[in-house]
Image (cartoon, rainbow, N blue to C red; front, side, top):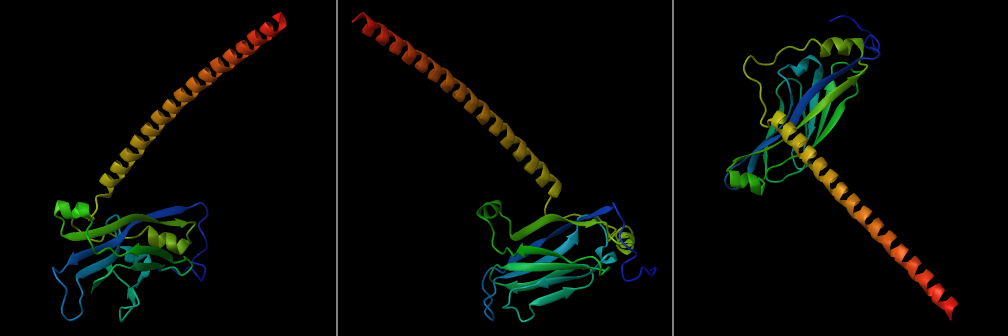
Length: 225
């Protein structure tokens, strides 16, 4: 690798590089509590690229901070797969910190709530394993020359098919459909409210006209007396 100096060769102005990632956890129920420690599940927490690429080109290490009840609370992973497998009985928040090869790039911190238990919907569908994973993006705005080189030279991680537990394309399509449906419903509700408001204004005008006419008629009657 070229010598970029302490500043990584300086920032590349106007450049933004986006690296999509997936993070989350899988969990499997033992079927009963283990006698030795009362643990009920085996779980794996992970960070992996959304696309088929080797993140170790630009990621130095990933720090997973577990619950304080674990003997070794801090787990450091320096090469793919970036994951930690453990057993337990409870759900808790895991702090994930991603460090980069270029020390001039600040680490990125993620928070993931470890899921062990199935939702009622998944139980009805017969799903045995719990999947809780999310799509996110590492955004490098004006990276250093060194980081630019690392980010654009990552290689393919595997030769086979690359897929995730969650179909994020389908999930995005469903989310967009739900948003469009909600927008349509809101527009309809606004139109209905506008019609009601127009009708109320018309009714109010008629009432005001009737009051004005009644007051005028009353005035004429008084004049006659």
